[in-house]
Length: 381
Image 1 (cartoon, rainbow, N blue to C red):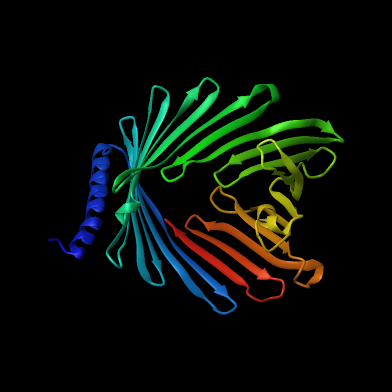
Image 2 (cartoon, rainbow, N blue to C red):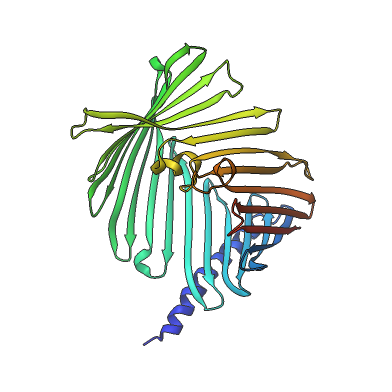
């Protein structure tokens, strides 16, 4: 009888050996191509009001490219412990695209997962397969996806099977097509699971034109209708594009509360407004206002704050790339500070030289309590 340690070691060695064989085969098949190497070393650190400076994570990446094939190794140290190692390869065998990734924890000799994907096109139909093996084995699965077009209709079908044991987990069928008469896009999707049967049926309509020009404003409507065993939900989103205002994109975010029948409506609600204004070529001012505390997260992106004002844009950077910056103010109505300011966030990222990049993020509450700072330094080769 094999010991648990032997089984764990084999679970690590076998996927690694398989990936190594693929790497060797790819390199032999592309031996006439010129190889190239690259990678990076990255340190992520943070500082809070209670902790002066903590190194959260150290990452290494080494990549090798030869022809159309590539391989890379990613390692991560958390709190000085090497707890993640990923080995990946990708390329093509004839007309079939192949990728494979093995992941494990070197500090405990624990196998985490092995994922292999293949994709090809047959008779104008795209076919892909994903095999995912993990520990415990009951979490492993095999997923097949096919997609193609039937006239103007784009179709995608997928099936997911558990492999330990071999059982049906779920399936989905989705379709998208244009409604040419109204210049809008329609979609429908049905999802099934082994436990619930039909789990959800969703319908969507995007960019339906209500008014071309009403009071100098273009009015568009997005609608999603979802049926599940627990509820039905109709969610319209009204988008206004005024010509007379500095901001070309304003969205009124709302929903319709439906009654017990599929066609009955209780009340239509507008619970937020969002917009963006371009200032110059590379700078954008954005704002958001939630009218319902329960919808703060959908409008401002943070459940604690009902209002957002922010500015983002590009920064000069090295090597034909642009850096970025973002500053935002969030308001909560309960902080007691000037203008109900609750939180200020800021971030920037820039590459100083071909071999060095730096990014910074900060979250500073208006009351000065609980601030957080994050740094990432990256050496590139």
